[in-house]
Image (cartoon, rainbow, N blue to C red; front, side, top):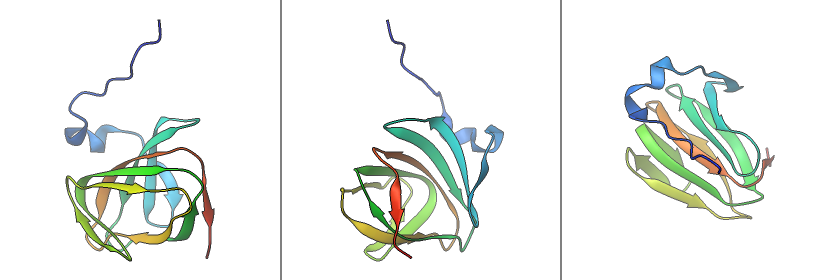
Length: 110
């Protein structure tokens, strides 16, 4: 029998998790690798991820702070679905933590 992965009270334990550098100003904690991949991304204030294209569905839940792209700013509690083929630049003016799941790796456009 395959057991589910359960992480209790995740928002109160961000500081206790091991993060590693992902992009300039963005750290990652891998929850599940493979396909789909699941991770926490922690953006420092002012950090950004250059324009990229999604090769599969990307799902983001903003857990803390706010995240922005060309379409708007998404506060804590926002669920964002970026479909395959969509492209954007992502940043956080104030810093944020997001839970992200992606089916396939992104392609950098910039």
